[in-house]
Length: 500
Image (cartoon, rainbow, N blue to C red; front, side):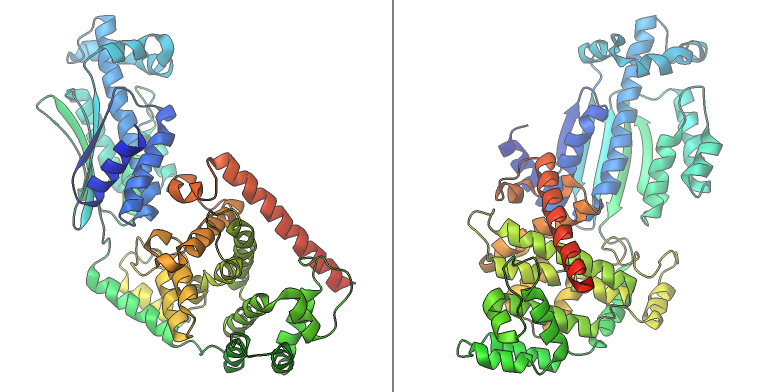
């Protein structure tokens, strides 16, 4: 499908118009294009976090529909009536092997047949609806087996139990529909949002995903508790705020800035340490703040100050906070390098500071007072939440970017940092004045997550990647690995210097 057609589909979908796609066949070879397609649709309505569940379910249903069509072609090929119980019993015995050996001629037969698959998706006010249909009615044996699977899915708790209950050498393992049901249920979507029906020679698998999985009233209570948690945090350190004001004052001299920094021993040590780090790769050791400022520049001083202020608030002995800082530092490092790759270029100093601070909201979430966590747990009926993983868009509706923005406002951060913090996952929503920096941190964050194996290439907006001349996952991985290695090397050299 050419890009303009896809753009039209995305536009129609985002405007609430149903869209359709037809398939003659569907196999694992079609999975990448399906994933990219679904990601484009979900991204257009800012629900890209649903990609994993939607893609997994659609993939399973499309494979099932294709298999049903192949089965009918196979029965026609061997001269048996699929609706005859005895013929079905005899014919299905060898079907599994034939389906696995699809190049045996069945694929050509399917292409020459009238059997087709249709995917329909509808974006509605409060939910997204999905239909996967094939133009063949189910036979009685298929209906019975599907009902058994659905009943089984309602009883099992995990895939291990599902496998033990559904092991079936007669036709297939029977895990597909059980997997679908488990996946939907574990995402907070009940069984009544999924169905399979056969009517008027059409078999349709249907499921829907509510945009609000938990009741609005409950979600608002949870949001209120979280925002109270933000309000309970200390203000941004006054001495750091004062230093930032001095640094950003055009009339401030290096001597004045140096004398103010020297009043804080911790910041003084950090400034001198960074000026002597391998990051600047210059000869000669520096021992005073004034020379350090001249070497690293005022924008880097600003970055150091923001980091120092945040570290004073968030406990660095918390291992989750340490992990977030490590990720943020890598994101900042990558952002500096990416800023020169974007056309037109982004402001590297702003990208660096934004990259360092983009996940402030996550720090809030992992350091919430346990009393607040218990309040949230008491509001939830499933009680499946833990200290950090329960704070997700799909179950909460208040994500870490929103919480980070609230904290940035509380701390009187400048507008450009607020934009990066709130839009580093969705830069297309950013103010045009800062969109270059938001897009840079967006890609840098993705690269840093690739390093941790915690992202999916399909959810990345390809139009943004094009601005960095990145055309493929391989290229993205290569750049990410190179920059991650450079970052690690700098860190190792800094640690070695500390030991010396």
